[in-house]
Image 1: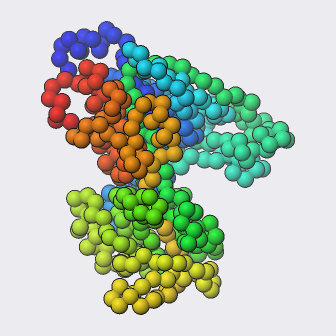
Image 2 (image 1 turned 60 degrees about the vertical axis):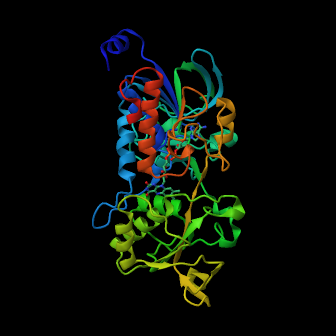
Image 3 (image 1 turned 30 degrees about the vertical axis):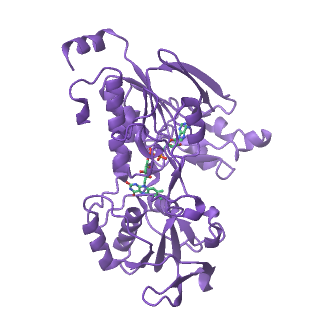
Length: 432
Ligand SMILES: Cc1cc2nc3c(=O)[nH]c(=O)nc-3n(C[C@H](O)[C@H](O)[C@H](O)COP(=O)(O)OP(=O)(O)OC[C@H]3O[C@@H](n4cnc5c(N)ncnc54)[C@H](O)[C@@H]3O)c2cc1C
């Protein structure tokens, strides 16, 4: 920072940036922006910060497999401890006008649990009579740690229960809290609204939702994180034979998703390795079309995985229910194509990264462009954070499929671009 900008930053009220989305990209952009002496309003539409990646398990086997899950936990802690970041949970952008700054309106759904009063004692969660009406965040650093699902809560059905509110000695629960609106202004915006995982219900031949022992990789991530181990949903026993099916939703021209999700090969192999580390007797097969080489040490990692995992270059056609809750995969033999029926205890669908459900609405409000798949498109081919609107920048999977490390790197770059736009970063801008 040169002398005059240093003086400016000391005498002027700090500038403010609106960050949309509280996944790893939004968390990183927010935190990096505060390093530039900027205030941040971080808007997250769900009840918890952390996005998809806060639901992931550590995939360490003999050594760290660099899945990135722990970096999300660390960044979340940094964000909640940073007073310059104001977090708005259950909030969404409803309107935006551009004058000399960005004037915006957020709609806020009630949290019902006051983060300042809640002590995370968990009594409401334990005693709630309606299953799923009170649910927990994935991380101990989620503030508040619990949230109320109005769709399942008896109070919102017929006012028949206020047990959680009555039990809370801190008076942290207010079931009558109403939704509201906030209007404010910001000097720049970072769009980090993320992705949605492919819903395999849209590929009915696999029977997701019908076969209990057919789960998605996201289900497996959550299971490994919450329970610390893999079990068959039908009987809670350790599966002896597991199949991963790759490219579910990705590289599927029939579905209009011709793109590669970039992350599924690596996460499937890491999860397979982590499971085999815990249960060396478990046999894991990965059914694939092509292995996506991602990251500089990927070839070495893939080579190592080939020693313990069976890779089958054939995409199974149909899956049927077998005896003892097993699933029978139909596929063609790699050498001569003859039909093979093979039973597995658990089948994992490696679901891909699809454009976020709010992309179209946000693009409309912010006057941004989407690419042919529905991700936000960048304006400058040399800068993937750029948009057609000065002062609005992109970070993470909102812009296209990428892993945690790349989402963080791009979010850091978006923060620096904001700094340059606001005249805070000086020096050689092309080094970012
Ligand atoms: C099954 C699976 C496993 C994976 N495993 C790994 C792995 O092991 N390692 C790895 O590096 N990568 C992995 N990935 C990729 C990883 O999930 C992404 O790189 C990362 O989550 C991207 O973060 P993000 O912040 O861009 O998006 P998200 O995690 O999707 O976060 C976006 C956030 O924005 C919020 N949001 C959306 N719209 C709005 C709106 N309009 N207003 C306010 N908030 C909004 C969402 O609620 C969400 O909290 C995996 C992906 C999948 C599908």
